[in-house]
Length: 531
Image (cartoon, rainbow, N blue to C red; front, side, top):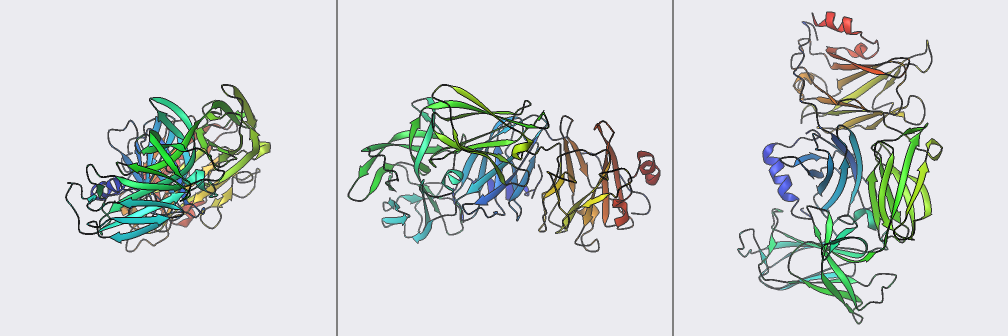
């Protein structure tokens, strides 16, 4: 696991926080042992309801691993987690002053999966005396907590607590993105697609930010504003979020109160609560191709144009994503790009009738880009700023090599068909490079200690580079621990591409000056250098 790797103690604290939805060179180099190859990698970007990146979000996967894996987002919202088991995994997100969330991701064995998530900032919070009844309101929603209902993990009363309340409504532009779960539910044991008419999240914490809970037998009265358009129903199904599966469980109904303009319910436990109705389903298949080849491992999202449902999935080896959608509705189809932004492929797209299947294909003409290779750099707390550098073969014979780094980040849809997706300057990483095409010649991958090698040397950085090359096993590289000349650059490996596009990885593990970036080093030269 990489990317802002928490210490065991910090990891325990961070995972506990998830339970609270809104917790505030001479002498020759030495080749380090190669770490075990990851099973698969999950990369993504996290933004808030306004689209601004969120740093220090704890991201934990709950899948087939023996223990949860975790990473933390950088200042641009990016994270990367290695060693994720294949299959559908739940991804739990927690950040101070934001509503916690659980989403699903489909992980392919040995592949990179990219995702994008959004978190809603907490709407209102108040420090209260738990021995008294308390009511908190936000955006037309409310929560009333009876006296003595807030207790610690052992069930003991507490003297003071912070209550946080957030109300989400379908009219919000980011509503479907920030709903803290998938738009899937279980109704009397049957899986259903739901359209959400509003979400209310209430949490308790002590003054240190540790989660508190609802006393056994206590109930909280909650209310949701009547949504627009008005469902005109006396009762609307009420659902609570299962944070391990990201699905909603039906728990009765909320009753309409026309005089107050709300739907009311009394709930026996803390959770994100949702007003939602089950809707008829159909299957929409989205196919992504680039120059006739399938685009594998891309995230596709379909958002209902009514702003009440959203689904997503990852393309398979045929470039297909199969999504269960709201039958007969219109929707927007989008693809996640490597830089964490969304490419809109179609708007007002009619979904198929109930029980039927439709297929829609998109190509490079629609702006589709592919990811043939991804290079990810992570490191420890010091030095603060390491930089990933890639020098790229010339576009034409005899041309100049190109140098891609934080000051020249490249492009995917045009030369050099490579892009630095994120540049981290505050420790840990990740820094991520995507290659959309493999040009004949030699790619040199290197790491520079931008912070300087005097106080916190590169060889003590814990730097770790992961190469994921489409169709080939994942390769991992750890920084060598001896650097006698205190050189500031580490040449990690060369990616040599022949005239037919077949790649070969040549491990270098060589320290040197900046010039080490520019001239490709053959395997023989690298071996001679090591001697």
